Length: 319
Ligand code: BMA
Image: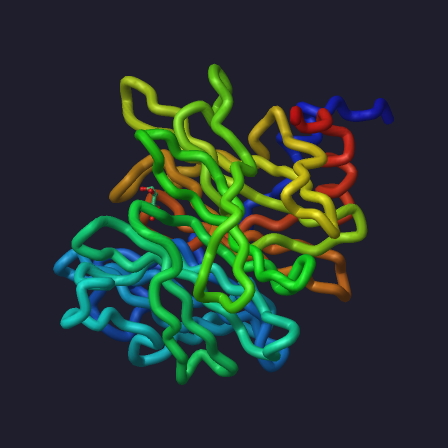
């Protein structure tokens, strides 16, 4: 068989699950407007999604859903796991878009999410062992900031945070460092928007960074504004394993875009927005969980080796 071109590989890398959407407001044990943009983790041999749930006021909270195979038979908790404290100015208008990593040295999960504060969206951190009780560590950096996740380990004894501040109207992905998860500095630009491309107007981290033998695999969303609205698609980058401030590769193409009806039509049509991923070691399958059209949760699967082959065939990133 003829070798696939890189564009064909990009197009065929992910397969959208035939049972999509896997979670909708109808699956919820209480009234909701939309369920989308979930963080993902493995807990007790199950796949756990921490789902953003929008209530009928338009405020979001986070609720746990679990499944043994990560695709079907989801069990949704009867009550939210993490709700906004509306007496605080930090999270007046709800909590959104969590990303989850297992912090190796603390043996706990770190959940970074967006708190909607009076001053705009801001990134907050909570730590948990079980997704029942959380230690809330507060906000990390000033607004406007979104799309954040910690790395699971330290680099040169510092924690590292990927995030997406908006500076002078520009929305690029940044990396910042901290000795204690409280004081952040040494801010540096990691991935910029690209003029003319599908990711020309905004970029932001998608799911948590994934550790691989080639380096950190980074999924990010890219936005193009059109006369008919914005299109949210997903691309890939590869960061150096020991020095994640070095971008080794970046895909020219997007690898996931809104095509299916449930991605095209919804509260915000034309949006695929991954926020969580799971690698199933037995099969080397990567499950990428995403919000579809800001309404439902969907999943796309790929073989991790194919994803790495593809990203290694992508151009070396510009300095
Ligand atoms: C982004 C975030 C996401 C949302 C997406 C598409 O800015 O606010 O929560 O899914 O826009 O509307």
